[in-house]
Length: 300
Ligand code: C5P
Image 1 (cartoon, protein in one colour):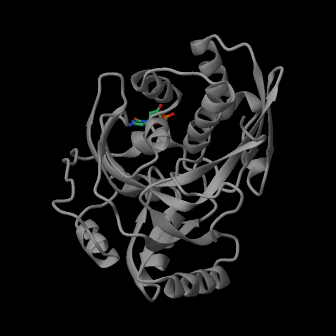
Image 2: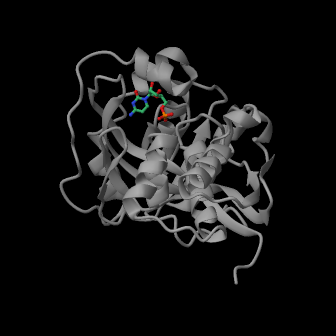
């Protein structure tokens, strides 16, 4: 017997590096990216109900588009259709992550919804069918469902295990601008990058930052051209004491800084918040897995 409501954490995903390595005939871009997760997350809670219903709360609730746009509902409806489920679910999304911001909030929410409904509706499918359903919902949903640091290839459907990454203090900044993913991909120009997986394990945060120093985010220039403030966010992180590496995640606009320790991460948050009070700035940590996240409370 499962306790209700079920609460499932939907952690932010972080593209530690992101190379755009080609483009398919259908316009989607092929990527090579190392993805890990953050300690901060949205939360999906689910209870049995006659129909599928969604309520949204939390600091970014108002930023979501209309109900019909919500990936949580899309995930629930696709799973029900696929498995012939007639039951519903009362779903609540606590939205703590900025919307449309390169850290996969909507994708993480969709993946957490699939995980929760798998338990609530007691549905079983082969792993490949879950992966296919996830990819139909969005290119980042399979990695969020996978829930462990991994390299992704193709448009996000190829997932290869990555070595364990060191838990690392991290600061996330969203400078309050939305850059739509299709617009950023469209703006990207120049030759394609090449796949460039890390050659060896990175046991410490310094090793990780050193390995990532020669790898970047191939969408950064395009996103910064659309919203120059994204460049400012990366520069401010990079200039903070104790920052080991600063980059944009995904197609932006959220940027992350890896830090030597929690103290320097907290100090950076204090300084940058003082200078840019309108920005969303949080101290959190980089994690290799979404397991062990408490869905009840954010870790910081
Ligand atoms: O799949 P998702 O909804 O995340 O993608 C949004 C848009 O971003 C796509 O319609 C496409 O224009 C672009 N995109 C892309 N290559 C990817 C992922 C997204 O071109 N790998």
